[in-house]
Length: 252
Image (tube, rainbow, N blue to C red; front, side, top):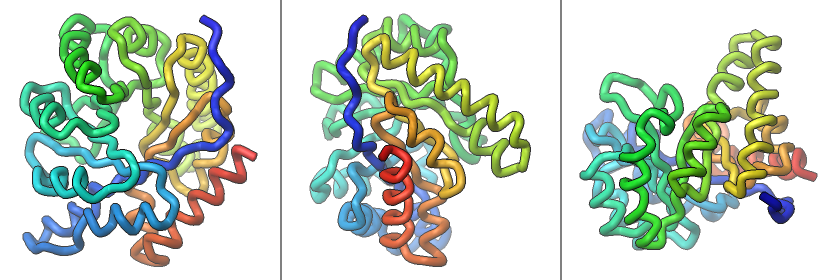
């Protein structure tokens, strides 16, 4: 399928989940993830990502309600493919929904969706979300079969799981990291040829972001845990501005 060249400017989505993790550790009202979202906007974030989990371990229902009310940039609502989450998305109609796998015992999202195994159910699950005007993204590994399945079920976006690349780099396994980076490069190109918008996320740091940011097919990176962690030392504004600088430098 012929596609238009992707835009050169790379969007940055900032995930605020772990501001809520810190808040919930004390059961208090602070730090407020909605305040963090507004600070991220001011620092140059192009969107805000929030993952409402089944166990509500970080982001809460009231956080989603307030984000919908106050954000001036798009909200990307990460969610498991469950009836409960579908109903919440249909109520609030965020700009985008990113469908992710979810297990109660995991510390963070451990892998991509197995769309190929659950194609029929996921096709029916995302249809009303698309009809409601939400831009539907599927969080997948850099795997041709999963990307093809995402295309078949009618998703508009795939977000490539960059964790294997980022983790192997941080562990000093540069050979494996290079292999995983090449997979991301190849699958970003492949997804683009299918007409899918390509995003990437999970595990990016200042040290790992530039190679993926340089892929011309990638239109958005979603980054959270590292930015919130770095904010402890330099502040959220400075952390986001530095990530934005690195992304722009790579894309230029």
